[in-house]
Length: 51
Image 1 (cartoon, rainbow, N blue to C red):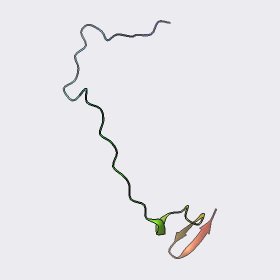
Image 2 (image 1 turned 180 degrees about the vertical axis):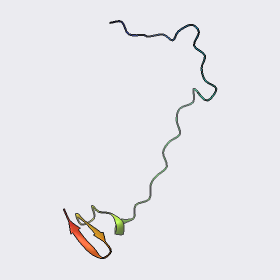
Image 3 (image 1 turned 135 degrees about the vertical axis):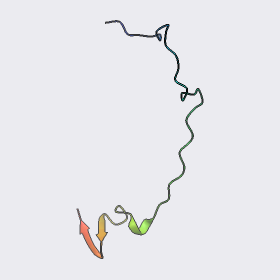
Image 4 (image 1 turned 180 degrees about the horizontal axis):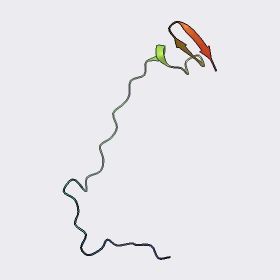
């Protein structure tokens, strides 16, 4: 089976398409007191649940 390597001649690029690269993702915030990996367990309403 041949793979298409070119767009059809009648193809028109949609107006919302750009040739610019996507923006870099923003740095996320880390809240250690809510992190389930801090001690290897989850804390929910003051009760620690260990997996």
